[in-house]
Each structure stands twice: as structure tokens, then as C-alpha cells.
Image (cartoon, rainbow, N blue to C red; front, top):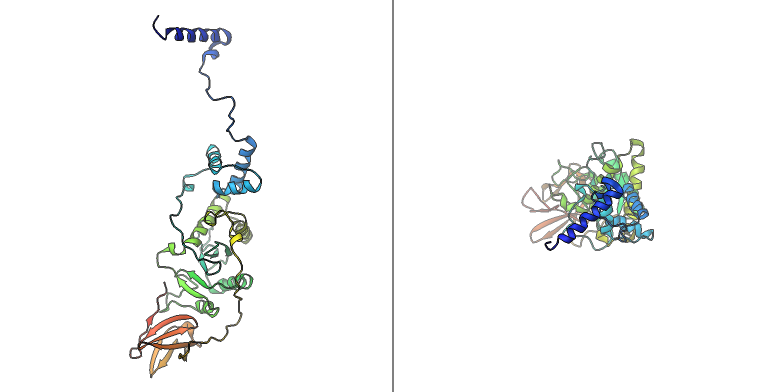
Length: 349
């Protein structure tokens, strides 16, 4: 008998005995899966992971891990992700690379980003208005205004400024109501109202939404929640937004904040909201001019147009190197050549 034939004969003998005892089922291939898996997550824990994922289908493994830790359950993110996979709770669109580099202001309320969400998932011409603190990602406002009209947006900001204080700066895109595409400087009455709060305004690059990366990322999270949890009916929409904002600010951990929530990082601005504009003291040596009803003022007999949005307001003219810099409060409006009728607008981006 050749080497190995004795082992084969023993296997055949064992198989014959199994057949005699159990018939054909006795010789069928048996599962090699171990009877016990000490490393396998307990069923109750798996069920809790699945429950949390189904409650918040737009949350990833690291954020679900944070919720489990608050319940005293310690599970690695990799284990949670494997549970997602076992229960078919991961879609291809969930697999997104992390940002390579992030930029942010050093303190809360140094810069707020403001924008309207697109209609995706909202089923209206315009989505809700979002105002987000750049440093903490805290959503200071999330409001269904129904349109981009200035009156509704101003009402939201008046309430927000009264409750949360006023930021140093605000960043917006070239959209209504904060940008007037027909005006030479792009200013609107709404823009000037923000300037009256001594807020420095910045406008993002055209066709470059990455400038407002944080509010755009916030809108991605909002869209994911709408698509996976379901868009609320019209009467419940603001209630749904209020609940999402509370969850985003106070419950949902943020990886860029080292798994803290925005509420743990943000604090109220110390700059109070003023219902009425206060007088502004321009720099020493400035000449004060009042802008007329069509947005112009005179220098040495020449008319210079700046913005109709400033009609009735005073601007400060400061001569520097044979040029005249025109300021409205702390904002540089434009640069003038006294011998030329046209001004050079200050950069807005």
C-alpha cells in the first residue's frame, strides 16, 4: 500500500459508518463553521447597533460608536461597520473619502457662513436657509423661509442676532437677497443692513462652492437625512428642521471637532444686536459725504456713482497717495481718481 492510502482507507471507512448510521445525510459535506465564536458580537449588541443605524441612517460607524459609548457600550468602529455590512446597511454613496485639509476660524463667531439649501430632498423651489458658525459648525439657524426674499431672511437673522449675538464676519454667495446682480457693487438694501451691524461681508468665488465648504457639507448631511428618513409634510417641515438642528448641534459628534458636538464648542457672541444703526466715527482726516437718492455724491463738481443701496447714508472719503478711498462704516466701498468720473470697486471675493 502506497503512502497515504491508509489515511484514505480510514476516511472511506468512517464515511461508510456515517452512511450506515444516518443514510445519505450522514456523508454530506458538513459546515466547517465553528460551533462557538467568542469574538462574535452578542446578538443584543448587534440589534442595538442596527436599531441606532436605522434611526439615523445618515450616520456612520464612528458616530454610532459615540452614541453607544454614552450608553456604556464599547464597540470598535470597525466592528460596527461590519455589522452594517452584515445587515446590508451600507450603500455605495456612503463610502466617501475624508477631506485632506480643513480651514477654519480660530474662535466661534469670527465668521458665519450663510446659504440656502438646494431643492433636492425638499421638493420646493428653494430649500431652508442655513447659517453656520465656521469654527464650531454650530447651526445658529435652519429655517424654512419659503423664498429668498429679503424680508423673510432679515426676520430670521433679527431673531438669531437677538438670541446668539452678532458675528464679526459673514460669508455668502452671489445670490439673493444679499447680492444684487443689477447693481455695480452687488450691494442690496439687505447687504447694507448687515453692514449697519458692523459685520464685515465676504462673497464666495463665483462657481466655486468650496469657498463655503462648511455650510455645503452641512447641506449634504441635511439632504442625506431627508432622503433616508423621508421629507416631512408641509405643516411639519419647520418642526422637522428644528429637531434636525438640535440633533446636529447637541447629539451628533463631529470628527473635525474630535468627536465633540458643535454645542460643546460654540458659545454666544458678545456683540449685541442693535435694532437701530448707531453713528459711525470715520478715520481722522476723512471727508464726509451723503449719498443722494440715485447713489451718487459730488467731488470738485464731478458726480461719482457708488451704489443706490447707500442712498441717504454718509460715506467717509480718505485721500491716500492721490487716490480717494471711499468707506461705508468699516467697509471699503471703492477707490476714486478725483479726475475720473468712474470709480474702481473694491474686491468682494
